[in-house]
Length: 552
Image (tube, rainbow, N blue to C red):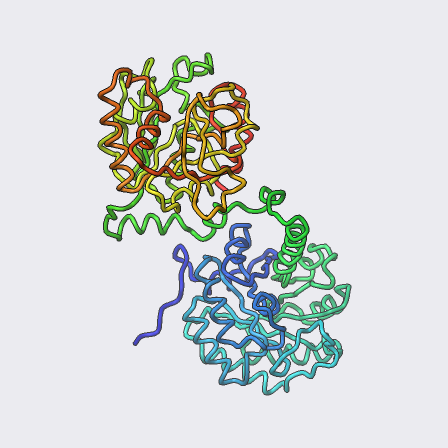
């Protein structure tokens, strides 16, 4: 079988990209990454290359930086990093994980996985991190290490694959003469570049070396201890690449420690949820959208995929001039129509079959990816008439939603996971909302939110404005889900109600009561806030503040 060809990005091999960094007339920078996610973040931050740090990878695996992670385990990690990025990766290859034979096998595996370069250091295997008693660490024999350098260059199949030889003479306390002697030997053995390392708090050793070395080949440095030195000093000294070698893992450790202590102390994530990356950002970094597109291309059509019906026929007269010529569902919320945001939430949960019932200003309602049904009798009518216009789409599993609501993503996820034939979402924090005394969507359930972990799931008992205040357990938010059987029961109930006088003005409470009268169970999924509807200007103002975390 032929060996795989070099990995390319936009026509430029990753190995060539790295070689160009070494040859750049400007000072270049690499940042440490330790897994695919951190590598992707660094690429997006603008770094042209990545340092796959042995210390950071070991730390992420929960082991010491003493070759406790095997070279095959490291290889697995950096393969994910290479798959997640398009920029070159320089692997911190420690001492080459053994002798010349180990290192030449390593090189072949690195090339197969699209790694652009490897750095090996002139210490003994197994290595110890340079900042842990570095002066006690013996250096490799010069000739033995030169043999490793030659083995790398002979083993590589891509002529642009680079080997960086790392000098540990300063770390071990040997001084400038030994560093220069080794540098000359490694360079003559074929190293493409040298990494000169120091643990001093100032760059004095590094600058003395660069002056004596005379720019005979590219130099890389790791200013972990002399980080306060202005980078212009390195540029003037002729350094080609600066490596920030462990800062990403250190930053993540501090963030996780602070976050986890707070959650432990407060016994909740409520106060920190808005201070961490939303799930949608995790999914974006994982390139989840590409999988959705691929599924649409390659998977057979699944007749059981959920469908959504959105009722967006009303004008929204309480909003005055804002809805004089534009339907409420198309009002701008933070620069994007309310209906567009709602459709995007359904699409994020893989609900692609979306039917929107339009009415007032239907020519203004245009949402990419949706189908449309028109309710030309919208004026003076209510929700069930709009739903009846889309009865042909009322086949389960189906989600039915008002077109003027926003909600946190977990609410839709929980609703889709509920096994009930018909499930409605109910806000148990209804008293915190400003509503008239006898609101039509107030509900009574078999047991309240405080007893939601009852042996039986809560179910609807009654709904409507006739409920006394002390009977109310919550407010239906305008969101429900039905299985195929549940959808069939809703269609049947609609047929009965459609034959009654006044059907055009009937609301969902009358549909639910008809279903209850038939003996159907309507499950109640309790929430506590985290949603809103847009009925007036005060609601619209709240929506602009709320929308920043609706999809998290």
